[in-house]
Amino acid sequence: GQQVMQIPQYQHVQEGEDFTTYCNSSTTLSNIQWYKQRPGGHPVFLIQLVKSGEVKKQKRLTFQFGEAKKNSSLHITATQTTDVGTYFCAEQGAQKLVFGQGTRLTINP
Amino acid sequence: GAVVSQHPSRVICKSGTSVKIECRSLDFQATTMFWYRQFPKKSLMLMATSNEGSKATYEQGVEKDKFLINHASLTLSTLTVTSAHPEDSSFYICSARVGAQGYTFGSGTRLTVV
Image 1: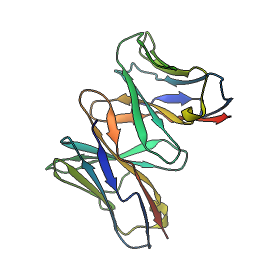
Image 2: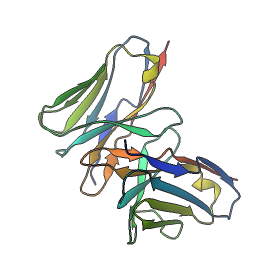
Image 3: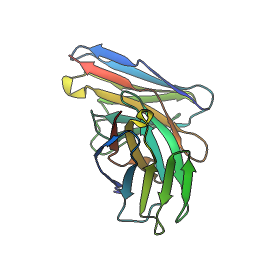
Image 4: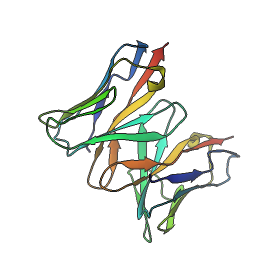
């Protein structure tokens, strides 16, 4: 079935440094969604990308969807301790949401 | 915004007993709800899709008789872990699709079977 591969699995940064997580698929994605899960919490919807080459920003977060719709990235500029958590990409398939493996972000204050 | 309320948040039960987890959509109707299982530091694995008024659709490898799903109304879906064993210990989360995009998740249930 459809698989979305996400890297890196873990990322540790100093507060203030940038952070990027990547999702890749061997097949064309109909869309890509991004979620954030804080430690001990539940996933929270961040954004959905649908169009080829789409770029969306939410404050310090920049989301991109590749031209071929086979990859996506989430970039955080100047991380803050509140950014700690696991970031998941997910594809909305015909009937269900399929998650990537997630990237766990930890930050050294 | 749309909220899915999930209860209980934590439960400890003895091996062999059954545990029921409830998810309610508070301000919208959810004809479909999704049940996930998450192991520590792992991704969310879809277990089943709960459909109001009809049978749930289970993912491959998920035992239907082990994880009973009921979706009796447009606002309530339940997952019952029957005859629980320690290997069933996990974080269970429900979700519902809201509008044309995005899903809202319940707060999750941490099940510990002793």
